Amino acid sequence: MFDPNGPVLGIDPGLSCCGYGAILGRGEDCHVVASGVIRTPASDELPARLGQLADAIDALLEDLAPSAMAVERVLFQTNVRTAMSVAQASGLAMAAAARLGIPVVQYSPNEVKLAVTGSGRADKAQVQAMVARLLRLAAPPKPPDVADALALALCHTSGATVRSARNAVASPAPGYERAVAAALARDAIR
Image (tube, rainbow, N blue to C red; front, side, top):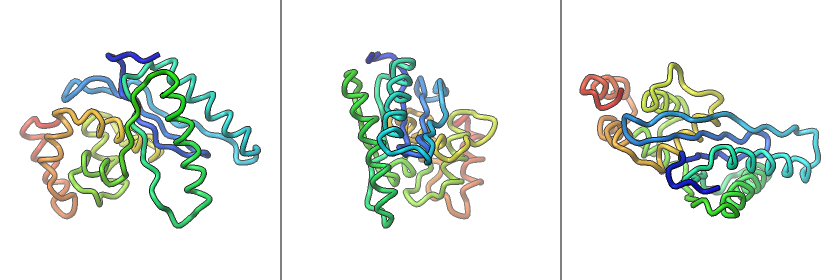
């Protein structure tokens, strides 16, 4: 199902809530093709939940025929249970893509934040705001898992829009809103 002209699919892995976001195009022509979350009921047994997630990811890949998949790299977490479920979801997504010949790239949360906001220490609200601006959305994507998945896809494409915003927002701290406004005024982001 690999389509070299297909969208880039970002996956924010999770067993309870797995975010996905597909974007097509580069720079100012970049737009959202699909986004949402895949949920599995906590009341179900682990094998059943993994099966449900695998089926949903397979269907998503079949529907979208992405050119690439960007997945959040699982890093050390203090909560081992959470890390395990995120790793399991991540593995399912990567294996599904690999079976279809879809290239998979992993990015750390800091790499994604840096690519989208200009700072690897940006908070969730800053990532959501920049994703909305870069993709010309009426409001920041919710839940945060969707924004994270779209941010992963944006990080992978690294199109002109992301580079312009990254250059405009050197630090998302106190001057964050001013920097975004300046970038908008210069038509760096539409």
